[in-house]
Length: 297
Image (cartoon, rainbow, N blue to C red; front, side, top):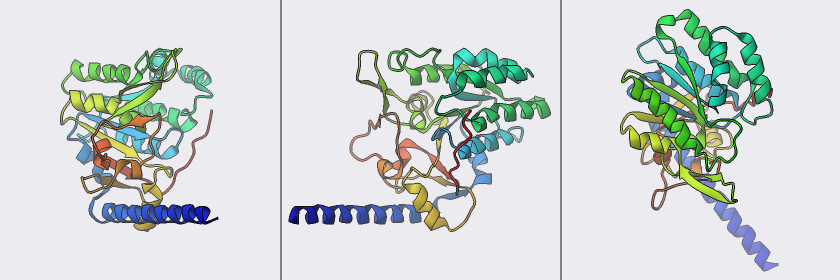
């Protein structure tokens, strides 16, 4: 009996410590590092590559990507949007961007059932197409960067390396190219590796897309994580902010511990010795007061 009581006491102490820690972190972010969402595109304009990380199947990351695209044409926009979809579907996207609605219908049918694909996610392409129609002088090219279908083994096919090479090709093609990359949050982290399933069983840990980019293009890459309610810092900020508007935060050395603030997916692990700080993995986070699930196809 006493052992059970001791365990409960220890768990209670741990919970109180975590709650106190997150309260301190959210206070620090809310008081010193907030950036109005309308100002963020101008801050990001200093970098050639903006990587937006998301938890798949939520609406808010899609809204954020559309917002960044909407600022194109104001001197702070993008030449390319790269999406975490198979390069095998590039022809269908090209046809749709050129006005063939049937191509999107066929693509949506092929993607039905994939966990990250929702009607809202695919609406990004419609949004970009409409933007290009209205502002042809600042048109945004859409490029799909994930591995070819069908996927046999994400480890052997090195997904993040594959995505990196496609972004790299765009950047090397023209020094004026500026790329918005829309991927899952674990691909967007700027350090560490992802454990991908191997054909032989087990996992092979390979550098993340964000890690590869920041090392190849020093000082030219910025990573933004759109928070979800599964990230521990999201509810802490909701309690702290006391307002119902999206807010961006610049992460610093004092922002807190990465693993305590964020929930990572795809078996991510850090390559930093000791504690991994929040600003080791993302440069900014964007907090929306909602976390709405998108409509599945």
